[in-house]
Length: 295
Ligand SMILES: Nc1ncnc2c1ncn2[C@@H]1O[C@H](COP(=O)(O)OP(=O)(O)OP(=O)(O)O)[C@@H](O)[C@H]1O
Image (tube, rainbow, N blue to C red; front, side, top):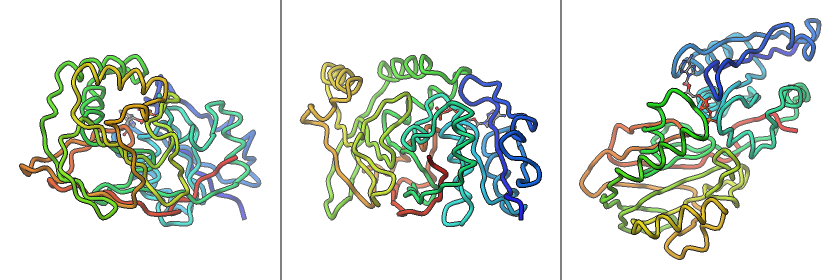
């Protein structure tokens, strides 16, 4: 029986103009052994409906061709199924692909898919909505919200959005946090929850995070003075954020975040802005619930 592989391509991810030709794929996946389909996304969340259709069409491997946002839309439909996720990194940051050691080089990434060597990784949910790389409440969500108004999806746009958000950000918002049997009240600058050890561009707030440990890595950054924020930013650039005593690191299986004044908290999921419907946020891990092709 032929192996049925579907490629879902986000043409605007990363630098844009992402293309995969049938002729190129045929050199890796000859027609007598493989049945190959290529689908292009045309709008936000299109990858999710295309993936559902591919599952109905009997795809055994569905390849997300894009960045963490595209992976999120494809993989959301694959959690707890036997269908394997493939990744061709074409995004700007490519945090998850980097953690999985899937190179941006098309030839090498296609050979990984061809090998069909799969591992099961943990996945997370925020109020039931899946995430695979990371999620966050506070500063990072505001940066992403600003970034999404940009037309270019590159490192420089992230830097511009970060500086603009720092200038205008007011983070007086007390939340109740529940994790590992403890409850605390805090006014956070940032609550970052990561499944992966990289957020993209080789940057990481959680270098010890593992995709297979059954745990999420939580970083709690409280409200800080402008001077301390500057120090935090410098330490982060050199992956030394743990040197700052105000920044805390926890490993958790679940987290509840509730705004004291019942305000809806803005979040980001795998680098896409997300506004939950309720003021209470519940984050949870689902161990080894997604099969992914790796080297
Ligand atoms: N044709 C399209 N037009 C506009 N947006 C699209 C289209 N196809 C997909 N999208 C949206 O593009 C967004 C960004 O995709 P993705 O995250 O894959 O790229 P990226 O942001 O460049 O990479 P990374 O997340 O690694 O930084 C996703 O939210 C997706 O829904």
